[in-house]
Length: 380
Ligand code: V47
Ligand code: SF4
Image (cartoon, rainbow, N blue to C red; front, top):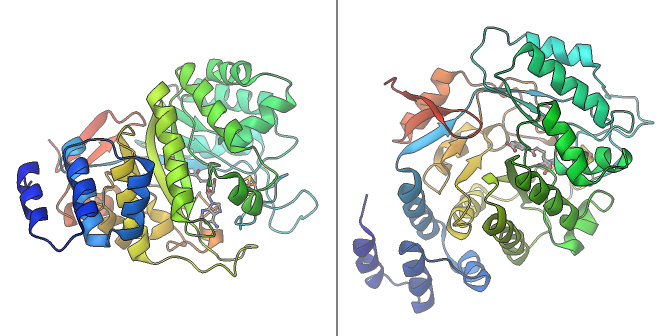
């Protein structure tokens, strides 16, 4: 790796503006940049420049290690009381066409189908079904844990949690404690979208507010439940909205340190109410990963969700601040294939995934949900 002092010297001899050089020097010296500086970088930093800075931060934090995990998804239902304009997946209660709802037994069959396989995590996320309440999911988690106690249960976006907890007339703290007692280990990052109230009003008016989303995650962290955080980008939001989103994440993380991973999710425009909004380019995807790594100096990991952007872009992202590629999953996740994701039947074997990581000159490390390394490839 090039040393920080050398990078600063190199910067002196580039045609970069004084302001870009000043901000770059802060990043190189691992000083926090302000939201205004972040916005300036977003607006003026070209992709290679941002990539170099993000890669420097990534190397400092993780060296060449690139994490992946072995997980599988359960999507209990795609029936949803909400009507997010970007969603290609949900069906309203009255729409029977293409709708599904799984019973506890259906979901336990999925869990049992992984018996004997070295998966470490089950990721449970779906639509918000009015009849699937907190007790239904508490019982499901208990059954999963009774069957396979070592399986980490990462479940329910803050949107689902908000609905089921409020419907049960509990406080967030009571609801989350109940689910934790049933065996819930962590919370995925979905439902964050973009925190700005005006944008949220236009793309997902009726679901939980940004303040509620953040309060649920804060409460979870206080109860010892770690979580992830996403950002849906590349639709009608501006760079300023993205910086605002990441500032709110950074501020909460300063208080709780409960976020493990930031996951930028690229808006896909297939088959939803926002299909007139063009998708952003791969260049913008890379600039966005880089900005996430540069700006959120207190969130340990940045993840590329490869089923969404495709394996080639995921590989490229490893030079733009990303240190984690989502697990070796099969086609149990439908939310993206229905939105026009690159990978229609996302499935990568461990060998394919580790080769993809090695092909980018990185070291593949299988992790558990909490980033404990299980093994490195080639095996050590
Ligand atoms: O909140 C829905 C997104 C999210 C579209 O925590 C779309 O490890 C793009 O949260 N284009 C749910 N995105 C998925 C999610 C997730 C995924 C992977 C890992 C983790 C984790 C969490 O999917 C929703 C929404 O932001 N989404 N529709 C779309 N058309
Ligand atoms: Fe429902 Fe989630 Fe789709 Fe919104 S994104 S409509 S909350 S399934």
